[in-house]
Image (cartoon, rainbow, N blue to C red; front, side):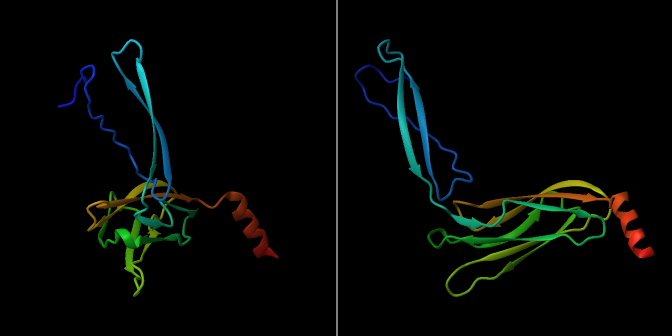
Length: 169
């Protein structure tokens, strides 16, 4: 049970590090330990950790921005690292009311790889947000989130006037 460490005794200090989105990088942290020792009220521990990359993801956020009536879609590529191989079991959307999405397994003999295509279905102007959840069979990374931002705009009046002038010529 955690608690004070008596003078002259040993103890264990557990440190938990949030490694989300830090895969493939080295993380430097300074930890402050507060003590009841008047001569050493604070102890500092420098921590340097290399975080394994579990996968490569081409985009963590998809932006579908354009005018009403224009087809908008983007493809995200997901490649699990060989040392942390996993399969994507399913894809779900938090809302799913303004997007279609489709996952394709494009793996070959040397690597596992997926393409996720996200397409706008919103027909009227306005913004929207959604989140796609890729469920995996990994115990280390059971879920991968991809944010989707859409902003469907009305064509501006200036552009419409320019188009009508071009048609007159």
